[in-house]
Length: 518
Image (cartoon, rainbow, N blue to C red; front, side, top):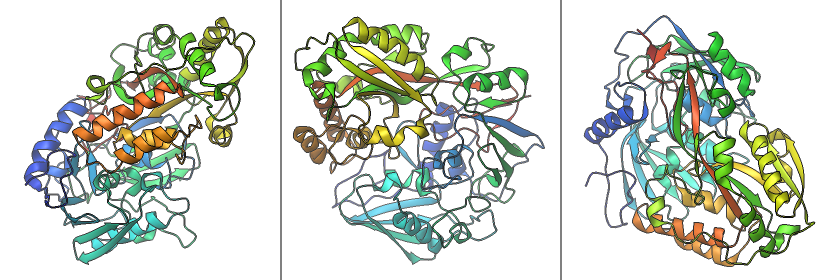
């Protein structure tokens, strides 16, 4: 039986995906996810067909690298947005899995999956892609310290069982194994990428249509077209990347002609752009106020309920986002197509307390320009209810340790609820369970943990979707978070290039099909 989307079938059934499925699904992805058209690399027979331009695209990025572009960190997303690193499979905007460096796969028992590796692929250093290279990349990721976030909760072992066949086993049944392999954190690199000291260099070692040739600290990166790419030859001769954390500066670069494409234009700057330059993209990102349920005033559920009652997200969407966002009804937003129909009661079950004179610290980070502005409006709303608010606003890198250790009473968070696996239940497990790796709310509730434990083994499909929404309801009823907005990011494009990907999952941006405007 051919695999349809993400659906993971029972252990007694085998699944295989072939090139015919890739053709249909990939064409749908490009039509839905990109400006313009173009074929998908998974549908190509390879060989570098097509003729590229001699022009280069100038790209202004939001965040500079934090770990010298190590794929085992959040920097991995940059590698996929530049189309320089590729994984075995890819997740499209409908949360369906498509072939990439693997052309087909099957699950042979609870713990075992067999992948067929694409023929004719070379790394940017000229080495051939084979099963041994895939085994090495996946084993390097599994042995990394710290382990890549996408592998938390599962131990993975890869073995080359043929020249172009890799068998992957897990220590526990994992319904999200194929989804995990779509993460840029599990991109495949040549053996030359991996140093004896545990470092990984993606410079000249990926498989994508663009070769990363230089990284200059946290200021610029350079990529050149890889002429031997297995799919369609890239239309652009290369990508010149500048890291521009200041949103106003990114917008200015677009207006002045210094940038062709700019990531994440702040709402306050979007109105200054010509309307042909600003494109709204619905995101799987939710902005919410995390309340410290472990210590401080918000350890009292009645105080949390008072904060929930005090906050009016509509005002924030209308003023801060200028309507370029959706009021959050819960943690899981409209980018997840089934969420609204399955949503339960998300109101806190405890009556609000009298909070006159209750002092709280409200944290926000500057990396997303709207968050400090939201902090100002939240301070107004909370103080109107009686709270005494002190703001603490910094760059994220300078406050992450305090956030994770419960150093603040409350914190405004902007989170991609699909994380690395395309699975919002995994986001809930990370952010709202006792052992969650990103539990800013410090929530440790046995009932929530049990719902998550019951939901995690479920195959992707109807039952897992319902479990996800049941968990959301439980978190919200405890008042651990106040949802504010579901983001619609503004992507800036000068009009000098077409077929720039507008990806709700924030995994693609410049692709082999991005070409000069006529």
